[in-house]
Image 1 (cartoon, rainbow, N blue to C red):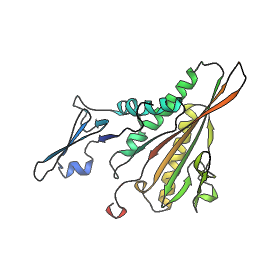
Image 2: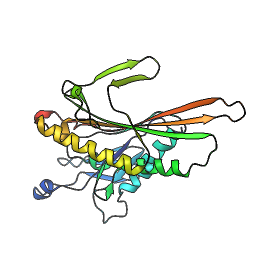
Image 3: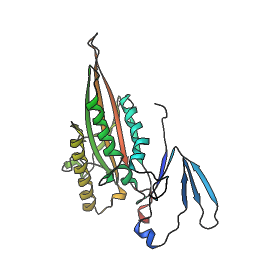
Image 4: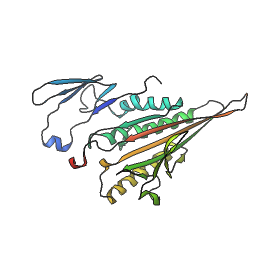
Length: 255
């Protein structure tokens, strides 16, 4: 694992409200450098990240699409997981900044989560290593008002009060009662994600909440069962991939 932590920032196009208000642009990006200009005095400040993704204007040479973001971030997450590491990728920012678009995507513009799932199963199907059996499990939960809900099992009676987070001395924190489902293909996991997303939206309406107030955590458990043909010893290499779409970073009173 070359780098334990990477930080990327992304700027989106103006939305309808910003366009109608004729808002001015104060962000510029070139390579890994992000420049912010103070609109009052013109003072510029520069910040360097691992990646600065310019997704504001498709007509420029530096425009970064969904595939670029996945190739830079998602592929590295999968490679580290394949080596047996636990990995996490999360999106942070205020409501409307494009977190869900980057993580999940909309329509044909798929985000990191579906692209990562498809690439994972592509690698599994292409694996020809003898003595290795691969297994994938997935779970999806939502955290709203400090309550954990199972999005793969929205009818779970424990959802209303919230599932309990407990600590395992060997494997660390886990959610008691959270459904972890075996998945055999990308089509299967894509269907589960769609059902989980629908459960999240309906639940938010029933609780009189907005999606910006809820964290969504999609977790993939990759287990590689390796059999040594000489000793016939069987070992499991287990990796946890956590893909997180965090709630809006602003205060609720600001929305």
